[in-house]
Image (tube, rainbow, N blue to C red; front, side, top):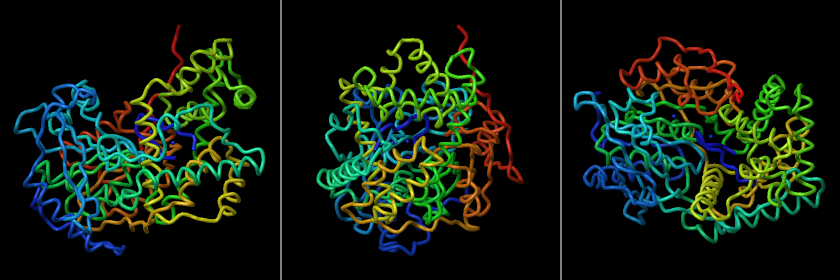
Length: 528
């Protein structure tokens, strides 16, 4: 259950930073994975073609909700990089041009917000809306977003009918019996079967290494000799894989809120680790609610807040609130608080209103909008890509006994998210397409310094992931936001971090040593 920056993926089965080689330079070190050498050759060929073709920029389609001066275009990539002359797919890209002078311009900054399944197409709006955190960087770079393969406008995949996917209420993710587990297991098998039936031809190629290769082709199409990249959440794993495959192509690379890149963590163990971290951050929020009980009247101790949560779940289980908000829908909404402290007040206000007798804010926030066809398609697609990538990237346990044992034990101490996360990932146990071996993420002396940014109490990507990536990328610098836990740090106001991000992107400057920053400001209840 990985998230995207600024977005919580709420499926209850989910989530949210030169002496240049030519565009057709070596694709980097071939990996000791099946087809590694062939794919290295294939990406070189694809990049050469993309450099010649460029991107035919034009006004974005009206229904993409990307207004001028943002422009859109397409980059053609191979479905299978081992067969560069075989079937092709198109990757949707967009950009907002750099706002500075020609002399200030340093190329393109490509962005991925995470997921897997997140779209980066809104990234250029940081320029057009004049986001103050990014005004200096926007003078130097074209801000480039893209829909990764399978996402949105880039040959989207699907696993179930979108209207069926969002129907509510769904089953309570916390099982009361073996019968409940059997029903969830059946649903997971059906979901995996649906993915194969609706999108089987794409599934073996829905891997993180292929997305990293797509980014290198996009880089070439943009005319950039080297890559400038910001990846958040799952986007950090893409960044780590890119640095491994194309170390000599990196110019500036920032990874924010880091997925642990260890082969032993991708992806089964990483999700179990998440369950522990989510409980920690859930507890942080409960303490905040208790401290601000005068504003919300939920409980003046964390224990009382927890009792109110359990009471709310039990009420919704007995009779879904508004007919549509059961325990699963509640969790989909409430998990945004452990993800992002920017959501603390939003969730608290809806909960407080409910306790005061007004159900409407909670229903509006937690229930799916069945009339929003485009939104429902996007939600189903995002979940399909999440599942497809995690199932394809690595071999998952196929023994239900192992899943049952691991999650039953975790749930005893970490009940907030454990079973929900398990059901979301269980389709990987019966996946009907090839599951690959993860790359050994690592880069040595021939890579420019990369910047790693991480909060110590992040729920979706525990802090240990940043430490692990730091070890694996030689010369990297780690900026730690201590005693903070929001997911996606570079988008928050914290001058200790913001100034260093600017210095890195604008001047290539990194500190001589790793840096620890004080936390950004804790949210305060809105005054009425």
